[in-house]
Image 1 (cartoon, rainbow, N blue to C red):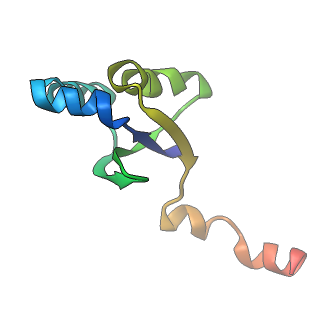
Image 2: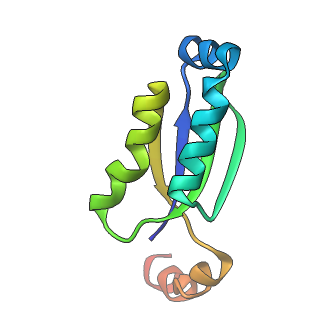
Length: 101
């Protein structure tokens, strides 16, 4: 299942890593290891945040994706299922609208 992983990094630990150069190296290593479909960096709630689009084949893969952020940066990590336009097209919205509308 396609998921959006959001890793919000606490400022103190990440700032220290920016200063000593370890945060960038750790991010490169994580991205190379996880091979996400897409990755973006942004700010959320005042924290440096990484947003990855991943294909989670089984719930047992959650630690594979979460632990690098937990252990490297003490990040808060969230997983959200997401759909492509094609996925949404197969969802049967019209039928659901008729049934529940």
